[in-house]
Image: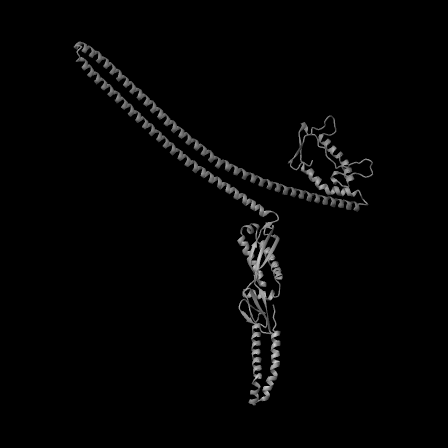
Length: 574
């Protein structure tokens, strides 16, 4: 990549050595024109021309070798004496003359580099670790400042070393971008995610002379399955919406089809009914005309026959058999003909009546069949409407109920899972609480045991003092528990009813109560003495040196019995 002009310099030095003798000879001749002409004449002149041409060619080759052109897929970096504050000059395109000795050059490739980033366990904003495998395409930038950074930091490095530096920078910036976004934002708003990656990665790559051409995020996954759960939720919502849309489209199509079928069937039924009615009307008219023509024919035949009979009777009357016979025959013939005519007329009338009755029956039958056809058409229309209504109810109600049932099942499963997790959390909390309480009780018992041990050690000379000290420590609690029994009682005064001597006794009931109270003091003193406690002086004092404990109580005045059983009011201290 680097070139030195050593060969050209050696050639120039050789030419200089060969020219030095000839130049010294020219200097020795001075003004002698003939010698100079002689020197330059012939072979000497030819040699001089060749030498000059060789020098010019050498300078041309040297200039061409030091004039470097920059192809479009490279950056020409000229370093050494640059004549400015920058450490190197960068050229993208064009050319530059490299000064020998003081300057040198090198190339930086602009070909893109593909870097695979296998990013795993990147912590997102909600502390969920995700894996974002990506492919980045980077290259050296042609911007002046970034190109200068590339010349300072990447010149002389191989492509693998440059890709390694870029990979470290991209990994750090990818983790930084993912830490500022939630999984929902990364998965749904890819454009914002790529913009942040482009901004942060480019900012850091520009510092070493690179820039990002393209980034391709191949996949986004997480270790906990959160993204998969989001996908399943979105897929379920899309499927449910598609089912709803399909059911609505089917319902609208079924309604339209049923309406069109109903209109078609009604129109067909109307046309069929009209056709049947027209056909029956034509048949009725035909039969009426045929019957009328037949009646007219029969009447004409009867009239022609009657005329013929009259003519024959007239001819018979003119016969030679006699006027009487002719008249008798004529009358008999006429009577017969009249009877025949009447009979024929009656028959014609009967046939006409029969024809009219038959026509009426056929008309009624045609009308009945038309009504039956209309009723059947109406029945088919009602049946089609019933089927349509059943289909509509099946699409709207049953499908909706099924969807609601599935939603209720999903909601119930989610609620059950939540309740299970809450119950598990509460159980863990209760267990932790009981463990902490048990640990605290254990520590309290250990402390008490240590305290009792120290107390017994302190009372080695007087071990009887230890129980007394413990009782004295618990005495306020015992007194407080005893006081609770009567703390809610309100006593304003105490009235003692005493009837004096009873059954010959020396004292009354009050005196006996006080005597019994005072008599119970010695056992109390013994109990207190065993516990190592001193009772108040108001309760008396036990005399020493007596075999039996005696109590010296304070003098108590026995009240006299009031006359006639009157009561004696006392305060609560008596």
